[in-house]
Length: 307
Image (cartoon, rainbow, N blue to C red; front, side, top):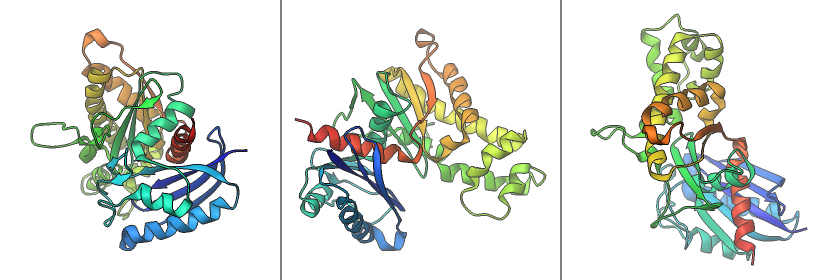
């Protein structure tokens, strides 16, 4: 049986998986990397994990999803927005020396979009647009089953689309940390809110309580959901007008809010697109969960190794 290595390199999370020719996960290693370790720490964990996974089979190739702009043709890192030390690093060359295997590198949202298109909620739709709302906001466009890159570096940076002329971008309103900030701001004026009581004195990760607060009918939670859904839909309306996707897939940590977020985005999106494009694309939640980048990395490796 042919096997493949998939690697996800994020800000504080590293995942290494071994998969088969159908991108089915056979083995996984996950590491948390302290920001103080910078890129050197991530590379140390990468070397360790690759060595451990290779004992389970002779892999044919390696696919990598990296959290930042990548020169996908060469595998050189343009920039990391989360961890210092990656800028300009020749990731593909380094991994090829480490593994003696062909290596294929792309931006993590591009890789995630490939995973969802081939094995997740985007399967059977063309084009497909994927948006990841986590520690940042990223995007990926799949056309005829392939990642659309455009000019180098080639990411669909939906998170950096502006919401106004003053420079407010989608990421500043819809990333997980941005929603956390909105929720913390409720403490002074919404002491009776169920959401405020749930977060207590926490400093980070407050958005994970939104789903439970929405189930209780909390007004503050509904307001934040509406604002976030509307902002994200406004940003996505530009992707609709430019690329006309059949489906938009919502992934990342915020997608764990589930159906309330999906419905809020879908409803708001209809009001932002021109009548000729109505009713607009289907909006769906990602189907692969936290495996979206690893599965996409496996798919990248499988395609790269194909004759």
